[in-house]
Amino acid sequence: MNDIKERIAAELLAVRDRSLAYTEAEDDLLVRQHSPLMSPLVWDLAHVGNYEELWVLRAAAGIEPIRPEIDDIYDAFKHPRKDRPTLPLLGPAEARRYIEGVRGRVLDVLDAIDLEGADPLHRDGFVFGLVIQHEHQHDETMLATLQLSGQPGLVREGDLPQGRTGGPEEMYVPAGPFMMGTATLAWAYDNERPAHQVDLPAYWIDRLPVGNRAYAAFIEEGGYDDPRWWSAEGWQWRQRSGVSAPLFWVRDGDGWWRRRFGRTEPVPMDEPVQHVSWYEADAYARWAGKRLPTEAEWEKACGWDPRARRARRYPWGEEAPDPARANLGHRAARPAPLGAYPAGASAYGAEQMVGDVWEWTGSWFQPYPGFRAFPYKEYSEVFFGQEYRVLRGGSWAADPAAVRTTFRNWDYPIRRQIFTGFRCARSELV
Ligand SMILES: [Fe+2]
Image 1 (cartoon, helix red, strand yellow):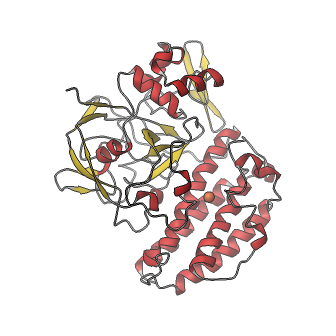
Image 2 (tube, helix red, strand yellow):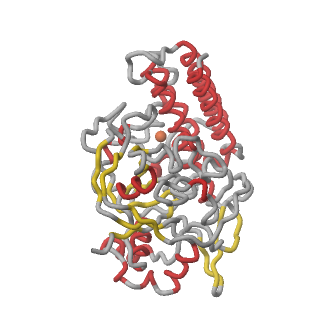
Image 3 (cartoon, protein in one colour):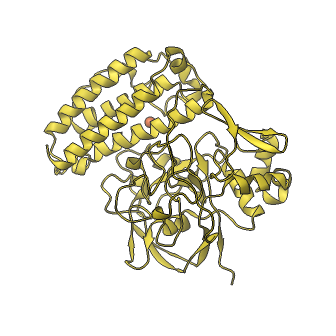
């Protein structure tokens, strides 16, 4: 096997180990629905195998369906998450057998396939990149489900670097054009393409994500009770939901505790805030005299190298993420303290832009000019419009295989179960 095939085989193995680790639990925990926002874990498990069957075996290799009768059950578009427990799902043991059977054939296809062929699904292993990233994204979703389940002892902990204090609060990004999106990254999704020039006025962006200490100050100063800080829809949501702190926070006298994977612990004040909705992020930013960065501002501050006039794959350059540069790939089940990654700074000096928490941006999820759906409309195109807000950067639960400066994620502005925080920006005063 050549290098790229070896890399694909290693990535397939790693992501499957991850999925199996998250579903190493009693059957009851796997088949139960822990929240109407989430699928039962056993749905995610069989769904990643079904997706792999559809795309690698059927679409790329032209192999006859193995289990066509289950396609409907695992089609994310046919059944919203809240309805999935009522479907005739494969049980845990059967789901594991099914995905293992699919995977065996996938490795045979990988062995035989020509990755330099004309088929865009084959070229540079795109279809394998598609299923690897897809499975990692479901693994992150499974972690959100495990967090919602409140069950202790299921999710691995680990060590993170220390934080550091000091340094500027904001970084300056001078006016000028940059290249947004990508034309060259082989495994990038359709929504990251094509690369296109965007000219931005000068702005300031926070060097670090907003931390729990600053967010707690927003709460103490009545941020949740003052409609001045909220958008009209945000205020409606706040009134309707009764929300008054990040999800999983619990007040205890003058302090805050949080629930995290079945433990209850004091909120670490030097960590980026997570589990806040877009509306909360937007209100905090207004209270702080700032705003959320647009998606373009976020990407320029993260990935543009103004000296080389070139976009970087990661904030620090092209080298793969490592433990000194970013908190990715579930090294520990939490964001790292603020200031933990000076070596991961971008060309403009912004830190912790990839890893730790997804970051809400002020932008709707929209196509780039010249967008073409590939390999199917339901990946991105059906989500474009003014319904979903863009998230950037990847969380501690995102795998490096599904993180890069151009990667776009999106969700409803009310969502809080995802590992999401934010940083602020402001326009240069003129
Ligand atoms: Fe999926």
